[in-house]
Length: 456
Ligand code: UD1
Ligand code: CA
Image (cartoon, rainbow, N blue to C red; front, top):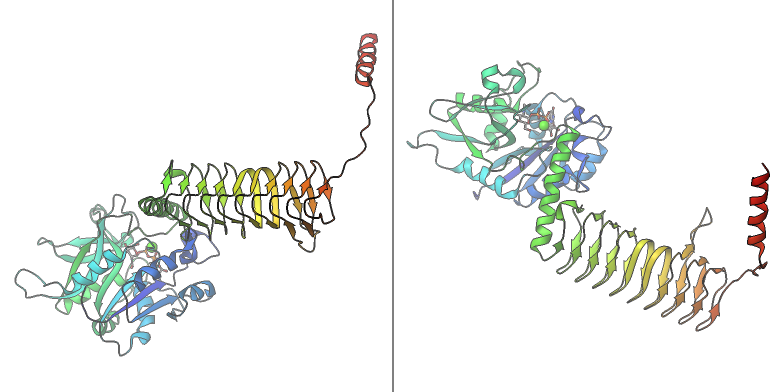
């Protein structure tokens, strides 16, 4: 890449009407992370001197995502060139290149952007006469609907870009389209942008008029081609968003597998952008990761498990059909089996909760065994209470532990108990209702019923 200073302008002021949403388009997530954050991270990786995000009115969510980067307000959405114009005051006095990116192109890679910046500095043409004023990223789209078409002259250089709504039927046949990323010198950009008008089908100021204006100034436009149209795919509708979700998921899964994670059916596993999976982790089919999950070395997550805000320790086993909610911590070698839910609960080293259990606001000691159907009753409609279970405790099946409660190390809880008092170490605690037994009652009952049936 060139050693000139670089500034990035990210256009994110559009309403995104086609999303039909109260949420600004660039806030919609891919793998749980807003589109704008994806492109911001990529832009940051180029180490630009500054990044300016153009936002529309009433978009506090977008401003928040822009974080420490500068934002400028485009008060009315009058087109992509008008949005860049709004950013110019922030570039006043800046000497270097400006990389303009549209905010609805979240999957673009740093490599592609570097190639675009490099193209702006490449030697102009064979005769080395024309001055490269501008580089534009373009790709061949299998379905170019809605995109700006790159109209080339006979010698293969770019003549102009025509937006679909202004294109003739012949121009619409062109599949080489503008991806929405351009690079040019800052001072020229400021001059050229003033010359863009809005005499077009949408009465908007199109940034795509730049090549024409640059040419009038004697500057040529160079096309940098993106190899993969999916990488530069824009998002206009929720259907587009779903296409890029699939793309993002396969990138994340591939990265996980290359880092040493086994996935038996990768295409069915849903990752979050921040999912951390260590080497030798095994993931079964249909596992879903929400935000904030870390899985340590050698842990196994079986089919149909759902995890969010959870930490799974080394060699721990989860599922099938387990649900780990925020604050679930599984220490090394612990096990959570089918239809077990953990919320804000820690399972000590080697401890097991294998079947049909709810553990909320709980601390379970090392090697404790939580029997099938154990429930921590942690909520009274107002407050939450803690359950503490010591090391090596055996909790019998179908036990209700009414919090706050402490079970001392090594204690046994008899099956079917409902406990509301602490249990000392190594004690046995159980609650049993008296059994009622009537010999032969069932037989008598059946005979009576059969007799009555016959008489009917
Ligand atoms: C734009 C390009 C088109 C290109 C396509 C690639 C123009 C005129 N058209 O079309 O050539 O093929 O992207 O996806 O540039 N925005 C503002 N302020 C505005 C208008 C838009 O900030 O007044 C922002 C939007 O938030 C969005 C981006 O600019 O992030 C692109 O706007 P959009 O309306 O989606 O442009 P397209 O019609 O897709
Ligand atoms: Ca778009």
